[in-house]
Length: 57
Image 1 (cartoon, helix red, strand yellow):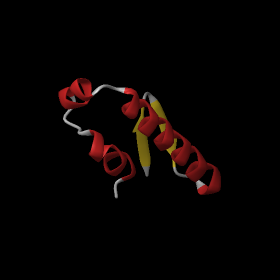
Image 2 (cartoon, one colour):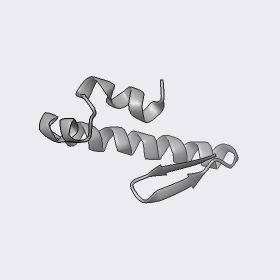
Image 3 (cartoon, rainbow, N blue to C red):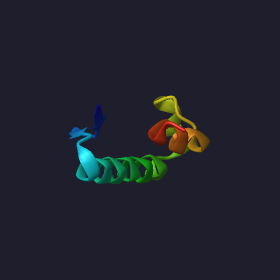
Image 4 (cartoon, rainbow, N blue to C red):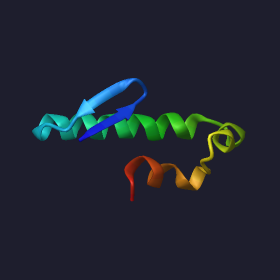
């Protein structure tokens, strides 16, 4: 499984892969939360959807 976040490619390979995936997704949530509502709307994401979009819940 390959996940792409901000020019990083993380290959899920054991514990280290899961740690790297967690860190990359956490960073993505922080970065998206730093955007204003207008910028989020431009990319089609509402503030309430950020976590679900990143974590896939």
